[in-house]
Image (cartoon, rainbow, N blue to C red; front, side, top):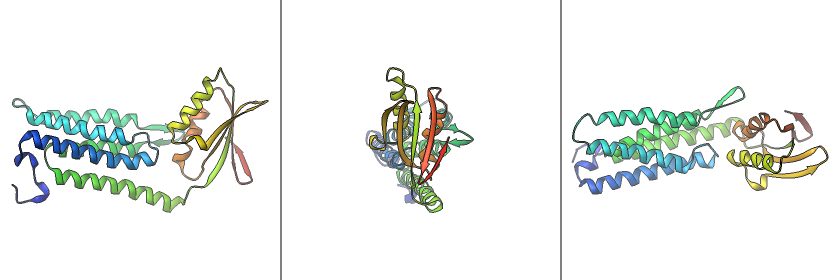
Length: 233
């Protein structure tokens, strides 16, 4: 056993059938812990994504340990390359703003954490997972301190219906952006179908559905009302 507890390697002190199982479980738990922060903020990637990324990176690293010939480090390098494609899927453009970079970075560093677990450095891996979580929570607290608590507004969306398909599409977008059933409702009117939404107008992440709606050709009008003021988008 190494004298350095921080770099204690479980593979060197336990049979592989035990150490492999332990690092896999720890990797998944750490991924779930990081994903919890993303999930509660309604980010594109949540519990399952981060847990699977962590487990995948750990599994590939364990495979590299089992390889007896060739250069095992090539598998880890491919994990680094491949995770970029998953991270890229979390990044998108909302108007003039780029969204999802923090989530993509979180996926990238979670994969690195999974590799550390796979190599057997369990304490090192746990410390990395806690650091990731601390950074994500610190950002959320900073955002709340900078912009304050949520301030609710009401947005009215007038759209044309097409056999119920458009309504389902709007509802799907709202669910993807983290809104719940009790935060919106549909109504009928002479000017068309109306979608009423109650949401935060202070934090940009809580208004991403507006960008999605603005691209839909069957949406004819979007009006946001906050207090006594009203503005068309």
